[in-house]
Image: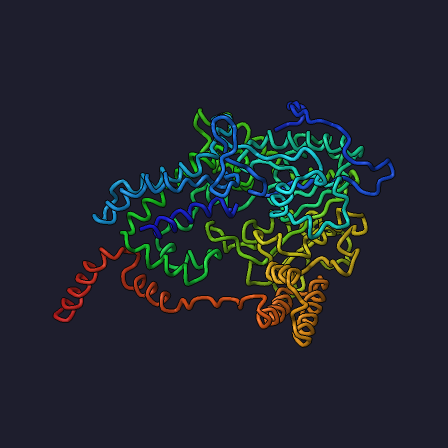
Length: 613
């Protein structure tokens, strides 16, 4: 029963985990101290840089009624994103209805209890009729440069954006982190960001700043460009990183009732495996285990849980509405924002809808003013299959490519553009430019910024922080103006590989603490060779993920031999569970175990009847 509840909760969490306004009318009620923080003079070669992070990449913590932080058993602040999981209360709410339902094989209050549990967990992030958060949460903000961060703040921010590993060339008194609540009020966030820019300018003495919006952070920047167009005169460079400029089809489908796991034939037959968050063994195990309850009970609980999550939390957050693609917004707004009590929220979301419609024009206006605008995007990964349209367009697991790339044209994942395809040149007038990716999947000439958009093949959105090349190029762009377009450096061509260096970094960090004096000469030599090969691969920005895997395996083998690392655990063989799951689905559909005997008897009688027919 516990596994069933956990798996059902995981499905609901996936909705959040993977997503997981007119300037003159607004006054900036933002009064930070403007004491100058940096010692640079007028000839400073660096521009101050503001990171605008993505979904859940800010520390939003739970507080008590007095505003004091709640702490876990280890003394750490409790996060409110994406939910506040009070397991004791949740189990207390669900346990008895779950047991009664299990015994009777009927829904004895289980689906209602499950929906209440979802509310208990996600309710911390709900908002009132004015889209203002009503939960006891506080966003930890940094009104000072990275050079003044304490150890806790450095660790918190580096968990999301690893400055320490990739920003050695940058003066830390010129780095800033704009923290915000992903469930927050979008007008407030755009206004705060504009005020934050004024603060940074005052603290550094500069009249222009760089912005680096990541994922959801791009929606905040997009709103600010619409409501505070004068900010274009205060920007030197904007570096979008996997930006949600056009929202995500995940939110578009969820807000339009196009959710895959609410279709039981898919839920019981491949949804969890194709999701990409579980290995097949675990996915098949859940498929087999969930049949302990009738399918009507399981689907009833999921439907009520999702309904509670969407209607009680998500649609009240204008931050979530900002992730709804403009083509999906009108029908979603009609569905959820038509009632009188939602009038204020609708008025606010309508303003951002206009910002989305104008987003490309607003970015082009920056370029026309001389602002350097870059875009770093990922492709060739289907969007997570929560969304109904997950395998109908190219994406990066969380956001579809046309959104992140500002309109690039592409073949679907696993497909290529037709033989003899000619690039569209929608935004490129130079006939000598070739903007079609080497594997003939993407036509970058259709994107708004064909000469300043870099593409990473096969990189997952949620693993961006482990692609060292994305981080290196972004930090290079922050540090100086040597890269002006996709032709500036052979190290950084327009089309690069997606790669994940987390495994290698874990091993190289282990080497740093290794006492090499105790190694034999041969082991020391083998380790030096493996490290040198690994470093050569890391230094090669054109190396693929396969190249990195080979280097990682070589280094791990040496470390395992000398006892400094463990062998990588082999994945459990899912074949037995796969056969069981497929057998039940092919013979008994989505029915639970308690329903199968009756189905089997009916099937037997049908066969006997046919024999005598």
